[in-house]
Length: 208
Image (cartoon, rainbow, N blue to C red; front, side, top):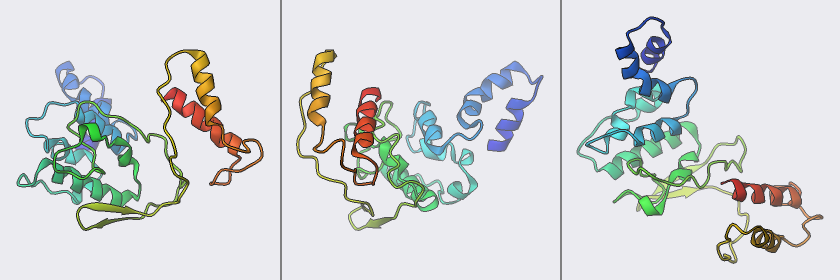
């Protein structure tokens, strides 16, 4: 279906009514759109059954992913979403979907590491996280629906400051309070200069 939609949308002279019908699908899968963008697009479509946010677009997934997911409407919505997440982890070895988890819109009955694809709003907390570079993620599902993930210890959150208003002086003061010891002479846990890591942190917080 993915190839059919792309082929039809690229043809000239097709009826405008047909073009208008496939346009939303074409925009979602055109080029090399990622699975995340496809799921984000489906989140905003009207589905009477929330499980169809996965089952309804199976034919738009890669053949490898869709082969791992068979429609089963006896499952709860949370189970359907969990199966999709685990299938994606097993194929891609990436934890990018964790960035779409939000406790405020958590899917009832699903673990916290499963995004709620039925929520119209959600955060993207880890959009640019790629600490392990191109290495594969090592994930294991353990009893009680817990996800065991291999990672590198970077540090503990020791304190959380107050929210900063839009006042420039307050922002500068807050940023200065974040400065670690030996900012100009030490290295971050990943090996890069501490100053570079600090600047990246400041700009990410400012832009996101």
